[in-house]
Image 1 (cartoon, rainbow, N blue to C red):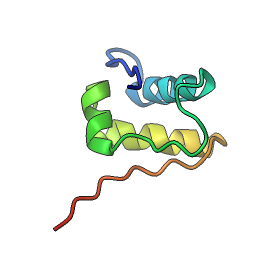
Image 2 (cartoon, rainbow, N blue to C red; image 1 turned 60 degrees about the vertical axis):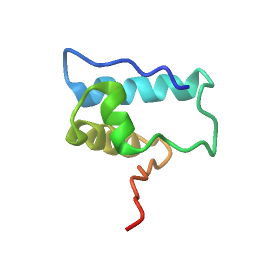
Image 3 (cartoon, helix red, strand yellow; image 1 turned 60 degrees about the horizontal axis):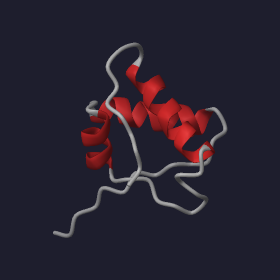
Length: 75
């Protein structure tokens, strides 16, 4: 289980991006691992979907690998 922590102060999306980056750098996530679904990221970070999406966009813009949140449910 990936040890994400809720974020409380400062620019939320920046703190979320930093935690995701640290998780990758510490080896808890490896190349090819899938990021948690958006709903689970919202729960883990206790943040809005907008903050999660902004964090992922910021990571991509700063040269980190492309992250795609999979939040698909069969109909």
